[in-house]
Length: 233
Image (tube, rainbow, N blue to C red; front, side, top):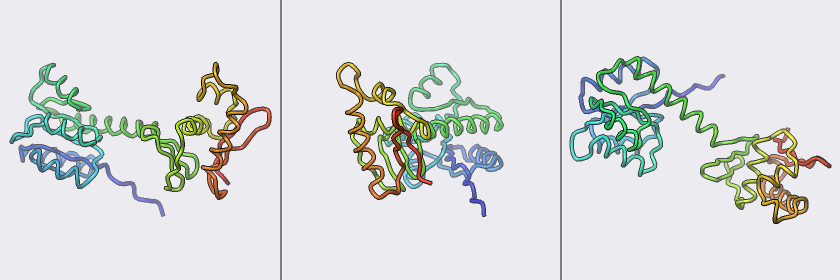
């Protein structure tokens, strides 16, 4: 049985109730799962309780926490979902302020809902592409390049910085021979360290950490050539 692909979750932050209803209806029709908030404090409650794939944010919100203030708070809190700002302020300076505050796109009012959904689609594609670039997988092994973490079957693997760089190079070329020269150029300073022996020592340590029980990805030595990283059959 095929798995169900979840709908993208979008939070609409808009204090005009009629506008919020119209935006939510358009996004629902487009295939998004949509929640709403009418001010900054309610939006903060929403994002702390649930992870959203994208946020539609009205520039002008009631109360002390306006749209840009809320956006700065979200980014400070580590909320990385792409944010599309909606605003009746169309000046170049205002658009620049919104983008510099952490916004990913800026759409001026009035707008067509077709453009709104098209811009959200583009933001989600960009987010997905970035996520794929920062995560690499070989079998059950996952490397998270920005977080600098490695897991195997969900269990963390502790690597030193040089071991991490070695594994990153092997993972980028998984299934292909990576020569000692390539590894040396990527990970060491060729003017200070003799390459062959030091690489062998580090590869041995990396093998043990990745595959202590014979279930992890295998670093195979290709005599006279280099190494191959591949998942077990």
